[in-house]
Length: 510
Image (cartoon, rainbow, N blue to C red; front, top):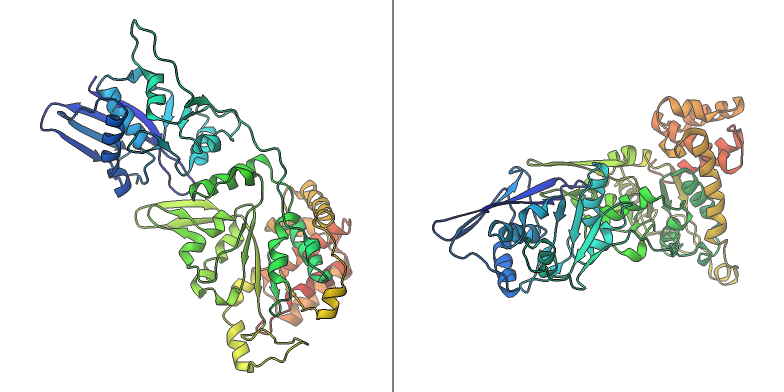
């Protein structure tokens, strides 16, 4: 037949919308035309497909007019993921494979000039899209991509190493027995790594018991944290070990996190179910943090989904980049709106930020004298806006240790012990309200707080004296709820409120 249809998927943000590759062959001046809002990489598929077919011993119809339509026409398509569907469409339209057998399959893969299949981004997002749409479709993917897609439960995924491995499965019926598939074609089993994720141990950090207490509270309640201290006080070491305190990832969380990593080409099977820790450089732009481009792609906050976003040297980030974090910190998602496309990407991360108290870094330090003037300190701390600081639940000062204290201090408490306490407190919150304390909103805050009378009075006095906004009051209340959960208390006592209040007064600019 002269017309064939092959199914695949594009990538737009976190979504993988369906794409139909329509191939029509007709008599006329020889040509090979690609239409359907294809990016440069997709248009270059003409040369890759032509060479792959010829070098694989298959016939490329040079003397016919070939038109390839990528439907829907208004959906942007990028990368080389449509090479394999285009090649199969040409083979089906020219009668070299059975077009009817292609029904029920979706294909994606980049072709080398020799016909080898190369991995593509977003294989896991494709498999998740099929699962969410309850579509029973078989996926055919290159090595590397097939292993990703097979992580989705009940997914039917086949791996093909070469174009000929795919062609052998869809040959037209004949009197002769079809050739057997080689080692390059295999059905993938849904297996996940059994090795538990490994994190750096908090025992490596000596001293800093007060800061570790705050990390425990942050992990138990899902709260964001700002650490302020001089250089070398251990802020980065503490932040890089925070992910080990978080609860184990569920299957759904692991799939979402891995799917976003796959969209960015960062998926690593050895890190399955390991909570990510993103650490972008302070020169990162707003687009690098929240995502963007055309078509929209996830940024660092989405790559840290269900994990930790660590922003070191916080005041050194561009002001626009920091202000872009306001909405995701509240909603847990980011909507990337551009002129041609709009995409919503999940971004439920825990923010761990670190900064020096002043430009030289030694304001308030007993080891060295600060050289900064009050005006310099004010300008430096003023780089962080009040609305942004208002959205960070916990603020803690990280003091530096003297050399004798550092050398004589015993190893700190290990991650396993602290994580066990945090997990017990979080499970208490989940059993009570179905979400972490940091996710409480609206009337649920008042319903679950259960403040004792003296605790209510103390919180009111603190809010009046410190000039807190309504958001600050609610965030301190949620922190106090987490402290009460760690203590195994059903109600919030005055001691819990007192501890929560002291975690909001570090910067002079506040």
